[in-house]
Length: 96
Length: 452
Image (cartoon, rainbow over all chains, first blue to last red; front, side, top):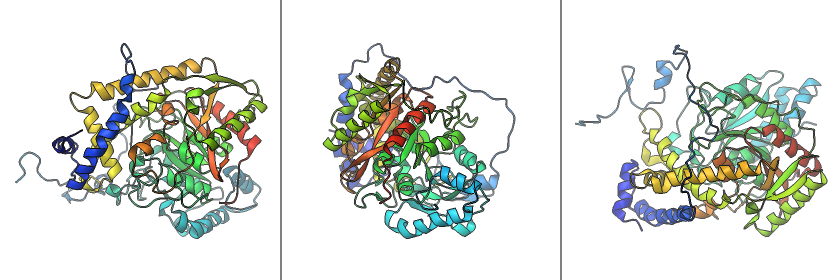
């Protein structure tokens, strides 16, 4: 069973703001799902290497030639706050 | 001859013979949409017929709403993207457009494709045209329902753990999950980068192969797209099943509801009648695939959805729906320092074993045949509040995603008047063979019911 603090900590790491109702619901639900996936512990995976990519493709490189891309206006069209052709955000390090 | 259950093949032939015009074809689909979509609710965005630019050979298509469409609202079924207008087209959209397909709208899905019933859409639930109280399956709920209801002859979709095959099987339609990397993922809103497969849903196997001929191929914009040569997926489609060996994996027959089992047994008899040699096979790690999948998927989701910060596009992270939050939370947990080896790494090792199972059986058989879903389409509200029940609906579809292999879902009959599908699974890049098998099965069975 996860404590309320543990669920809160995961939410904080994931940057998901949770209300207290959601926090309580996840506290009950997450352990059930974790128990479900822990069925894997029955499986002996000693000496088995993991697979991260299924079609055995190697890195693909290209010549460093510039190509047509989004215009500035297109790149900014979905931003909520734009100033002087840039996206405006809150300060990250020293928000005043 | 012009009706709403017309196939792409029939449309193309009709154009050549000048039996009808493209405007008449589009108008006929729009009439059906206007009449019935208020009930089925498959579209999030509908373009108006007057705004479309048609030529003599234009064919209608609708995109699952996680396909980026330039200048057209693209929400991925999520509230966080409720006002997102992409400045570019997904590669698949661009290819289909260049081949004469004209987009008529965007189709509902579980938000970010997280779900098996379509009910996790942040907007509304789509209904199954065969039974309005039931789900059409998910996550490509709108795509399957729209094709089944005769709103459109083809709809694109994505299959990360079964999201094409499950709804296709629940709606009497044909769905392809191509080999991982066969179709470009560029411009598709990412769910699980290592298993996302880009496919489509059609009424017939021929139509399905016709569309893959357009969408398949290497894309420099998707580093995981395969450089292997594509095939002509229609070239062998009439060759029949004689001489092929089809494996029946015993692990896929466990826990099936009664009707599904009977239906599958009668499908097997059809395969035999068509000249296929059937062999019982075993893929012993099948039961672990669903566990591994529900570690790998939330992990990759938590990473992919980290980019949704509400700064460059979309609204803030409070707007995530509950399933997206649940998956982000789980993924964050399983990737956290101290847990990584026990969960994510363990799951990727289990994945290796699932792949080995497939490799071993494909030394003996040409394709595998299996049910798509262990049960019939659930009623709306039946599983959506029980995550594990919902996840278990994917049991028979996720192994192919973990291994990357292609799978084709074809209509196999009805249980209690509800559609049931059969899936043919092949080795990597064997789509051509799957279409050959699927077509032979379809021509013999023709489980087509116009009543929906």
